[in-house]
Image 1: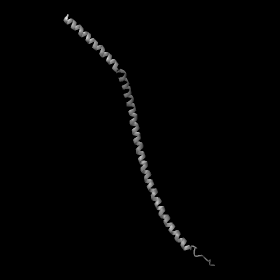
Image 2: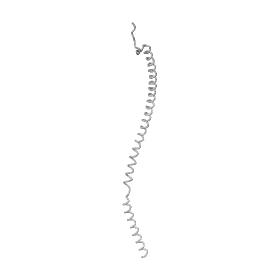
Image 3: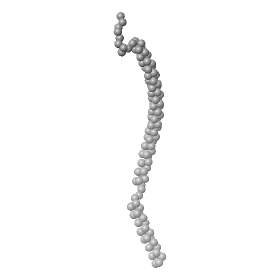
Image 4: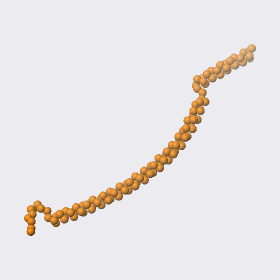
Length: 116
C-alpha cells in the first residue's frame, strides 16, 4: 500500500544525504578538536617546563637571600659596635676647646719664662 505524501515530505534519500553530510562535517569537527587537544597538550608541557624552571630559580634566590640575611646580621652587629665607640660632635667640641685652652696657658707660661 502506497501512502500519499505531500510535496513537503522528505524522502529517505534526502535524509540519507543529509546524514552523510552531517557525518562528514562531524569528522572534520572531530579532527579540529583533536588538533586543539594536541596543541593544548604541547602548551601544557611548555607551561610545566617554564614553571619548573621558575621554581628552581626561586629556590636559588631564596638560598642566596638566606645567606644575605646572615651577612646583614653580621654587618648590623659591627655597625652597632662602631656606633657605640663613636664620639659625638659635642664631645669633640669640648675636647678641642679644652686643648685650645691648655695650649694658650702653656704658651703664656713659656712667654713669661722667656721674658722674665
